[in-house]
Length: 484
Image 1 (cartoon, rainbow, N blue to C red):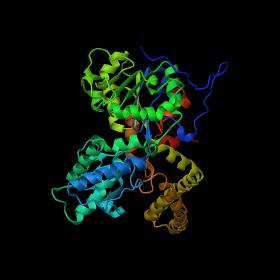
Image 2 (cartoon, rainbow, N blue to C red; image 1 turned 90 degrees about the vertical axis):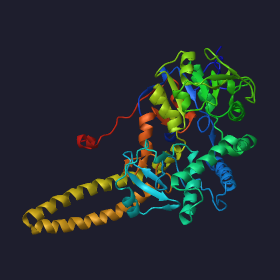
Image 3 (cartoon, one colour; image 1 turned 180 degrees about the horizontal axis):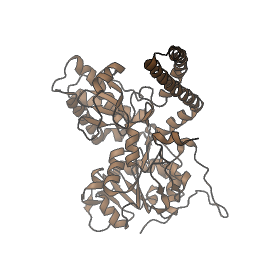
Image 4 (tube, helix red, strand yellow; image 1 turned 45 degrees about the vertical axis):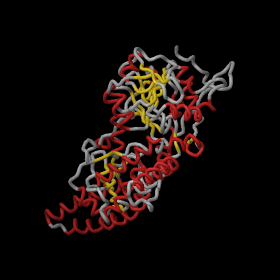
């Protein structure tokens, strides 16, 4: 049987009810496609960086150090490598052919590039990429779509500098070097030492969210079936969920009471598009697994399996389930593409970017006004040039000279504001969702595969499980011509 609903508040309220205040701007839930949460019958959650958020600088620094140690054991010169958590951000791409980290627009045009630890000049970048369109389906490019990529980028770029000075043994290409770093990081995550550190010192690694449990309780009270579907193993999952969740549960309840089904070692994204067998976890250490046949039973913990079995067991199909995760491809892309589930992407960096944008709002309005004036002057100059060239008009030439001087003065006012706008987000790579004046390649992927996106799971509580999340009207280049 499914677990009974839990109260939505830990303190009993006999004659009243609790209203949640509207979300602050940085905690909003943003819709790419309209999503009626009332129609959602089940909500599945990833765990790492979704239900549980880690302190990036601690987690990724430890992952970096473990992988660096492994690479040293394999004979690579890594003693001087260091980790800077601010050096990279999600949404970038690895160019395995040229050994570059790049940021691209939604159309795949590169707007910033770094080779090794050196940001490429505009001239070099244009020379290298003027005929290149970044297509993530090509094996040449690997996308940085989760926070786990920060340690990878740091290791790879520093090793590229070493390799460029003196080729590393056994490394014939930057792609080979990427593969070696990938193998070291895979061993880091599977050997268990990193997760053992986290279990032993969770307060160092975990950023607790008191709003998580009330959010899940409200969803259960609204009749949603809740699922935990994680690639982490049972031993790690149950310890971390107990640490992060149990303290916020009503008396006598634990995190297990919040979920109808728990699936560990799910092997996503394969979980969403293959038909792997499923096993029931019998003991805490995951040392005894029993093959399971038939529908999944609420209250049990399962190992492996597949999404189709979840749909059949819970009587779900198509757009009824919502899956919430932080991995743009492993959680959101394949879930939307194969199963047509509704999807929500967790992007924790969004909070800082929204706050930065709010702080820049007055400057942004000034910048937009100046840019509108620049557009007007550009058009005037173009017409005057044509008039001068058609008839040799001295009046047109004189007016052109005067307007050009005004345009130069205007550019001097625009430049510092434009630089300030570019500083929003990561100091090197800029805003996550923008690339210059365009949307970023990351923003395009979010638009395609995430129905909604937000910075943390608890933001859903501001909307309630009955919300009708409407997508904003999309803008088109000609919209401005219709505005009065």
